[in-house]
Image (cartoon, rainbow, N blue to C red; front, side, top):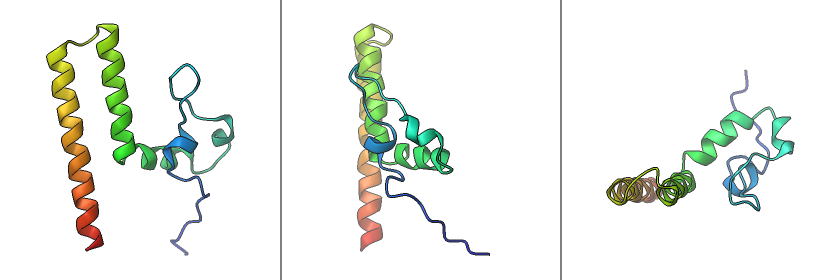
Length: 96
């Protein structure tokens, strides 16, 4: 059994598989619904630093709508920032 999988060129590219629409929200394009790899693709794209930036967007929207306060926003953004730095640091180590 061949374990290597052939993925489309858009696989895991956040702006292709989960683009921001005119209203500022993100949505999966219709063309992705027919793809066999859609679940793995979205998980891959959201699992990287770009996915953490989406979490940051959610925190900002929550703050602006009044669902969370200043300190909650600050705490969440700091944690996301730490995770992004950690991912980048691990990525650099793997290259070495």
